[in-house]
Image 1 (cartoon, helix red, strand yellow):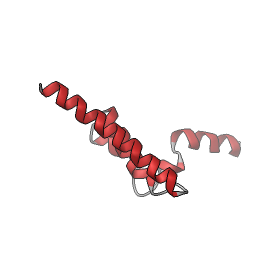
Image 2: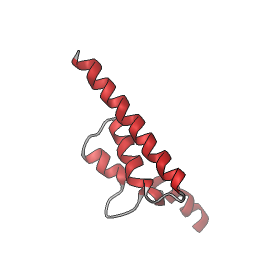
Image 3: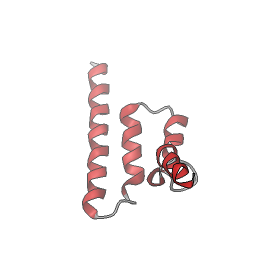
Length: 79
């Protein structure tokens, strides 16, 4: 049964999202962030815990991707 409990935790509370006092998903939901902003926060929050500099940089590049999408969306809607 313990193996099954580990699988559930990997889905519901993955360790790479569970650093600090709150989970990133709770922060995102509490602040009512949309998809783009939520993903940017998620990638920023976990990047420093990745092994290897290239994985860290990749997560920051993903965050920038979602931030750029959000900026474009707001620019489009303000015109």
